[in-house]
Length: 103
Length: 266
Image (cartoon, rainbow over all chains, first blue to last red; front, side, top):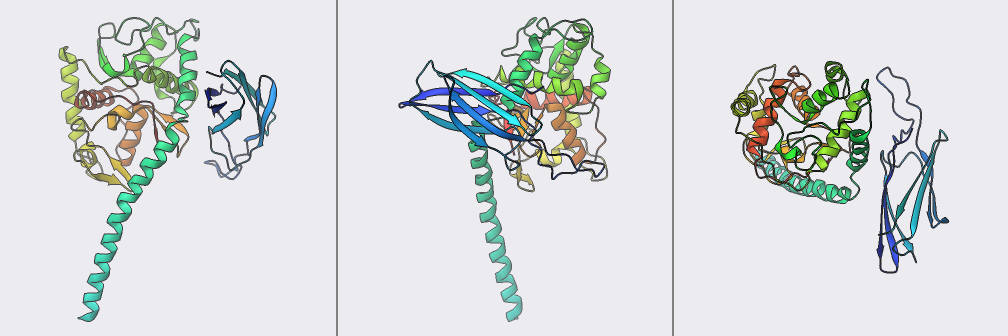
């Protein structure tokens, strides 16, 4: 089971700045373990964000993204009290979705 | 002659270049940390730890909310900056991790010795890291003020001092070999002088911390473990009295330093 994301969303100048911290191994598939066996790739492939249920951002991620990734974006027209939902899907098909209210 | 002179000139140039590289590298690392500080993944451990603190777990299906970290049962804010300290119920001076082990055994029914023997980052050790992050974060911005009123606490500070300066091993190393003066480095990593207060959020006041290079949250016990590995010493043991004594010594030296833990490290 995946650990929750940490989402901070703050209204700022006609929009909102959203900062998201995700908990994920982001294994590239390039590393080997102590026994010399390749550690299989395990990383987030898709990220999406929605404002009050309407998708405002989608992204395709790969192995170049760091472990426990941090991402920040600006949503135009968002205001305090609106709901931001961030979701990811990884290459094992695991999903995670967390919400935050814009402050 | 000409050759010798040009060699000297080349050496001087190289030295000047090295000095320049040093300052710009240190600045570079500081800049890198500042960029990362906003999204410190240690927060993920803090959230997890808060959940674990309140969750009913273990053979006795109990939460840790009755755990006394030194400020009364269940009081978390401000506890971290006064640890290690003497606890009357265990008759021991304990740091945060050994105290959590005691609580997990007494309240939740876990086997403390088995957890102490678990490798870092696995099983209940991974949960301990999260609990440490949560408890440390609740004292972020407060100043270290370890109690030294009890005779055991003063004894542990003295023991810690002796452990700190004890030279041995294949490299004839002590903690003091690297940490008794300012301006020393291991490769590019600047080392704090731990024989005095190295400043707010530096040295003892910066741990536990998230290490970007390994993507792990390191507790003080893990930090000490790696210091001993680098000295080619046998590790004194998780939550052992020697490791706790070192914590008391460093904590007493760091009195007044503002805790930035859990911080972020390269």
